[in-house]
Length: 493
Image 1 (tube, helix red, strand yellow):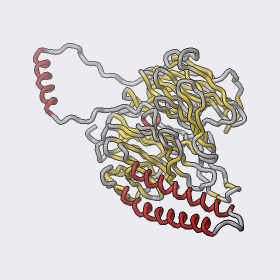
Image 2 (spheres, helix red, strand yellow):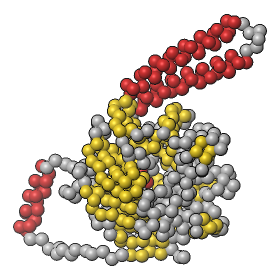
Image 3 (spheres, rainbow, N blue to C red):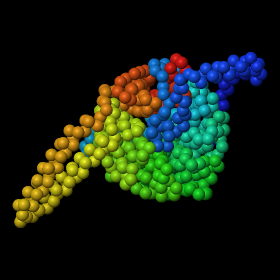
């Protein structure tokens, strides 16, 4: 089916352009009065998946509570995920009830700009535009495959990829096509879940930075993976900083991240990858085999947090990588959602929402990790000692091991001092930060917490699991796995 835009007419109010001098005088007086009133936080867009190219999940805009439901979008069907679910069991480690490592599209994630809400649909293979204030649909643009991640907004345009193997650029106001780019020359498709899917679908979404659109096209590890940068204005593929790199044995899945110099790509079951942003050359695989997942977050000082899945862990985990060498620093088992601001980590794990000092905690855990590695090394050295080894050498290794274990115990006792607070929470699926309020998504609910104390200040019901959250123009949008998008706002809005 050819790509098309369907426009939906919306009402408009018309006002006379004529102003009396008396009206102008009154208007000027009102401006003076407004200037003396307290200034509210400026409204802010949510132009990319999880707000920005670092996927921080943080907006400087504050929300007012309590908030009520303003409108709700209801899809005819729930989202049709790219991957049906996790493997049934890990036969190597004999672990059942595995957590999915490719759960990047369970809801219609949204971006928000120009008082409009944009989202891609895996149900009708389209990008939709809704009015932020009313929820009314203003236009729809259809592709030839599911659109699994929300479009990126930049300079009045929308950029997104589809399972049809194409990258699209639309005018955000009208939904009209500006340009369309085929990710690879090979146009072959295969049937997947009742639909035709390109052998090179775009399942990383698009990332727009420095007038370039970055994306990867990939499906299976025995097919080619393409990591690309094209011109945002024209869709051109030739020029400075533009590239298409071919790689083998990769599976690019889930939202791409970017710093000023690097691109980060998730692989689902395998470890994430770092690429040079200017050339597209592969720099490093982060972590060991099995360090899977499709969640990524890059802090302002370039700490990378990645994970959710692991080949031999049933509940998943999140992992911290260092900014310089990007070595693994610390692992949080059972962690499900996270945001980090000004060195404070807000994390949901094992039924608790918690806040702690990142550097203090990671520093202690790093020292513990080093001591544990030393103990393992000394144990291996002791096993290799021959029968004729000196007793003093065995005693030295035993003494070093005993000392390290004692140091670990002391360091572990100091870990609780790094925490600011911990509170029970049944909202594990998503976490964002708006001003000084944490918003968390749960099963059939969404809740708000104070960053200073962890106190719950508001909660509301939704239908389904709230995996998607976004904030803009004084409104909170909640996306659930039943195909709902719910808009909450304070009565004053």
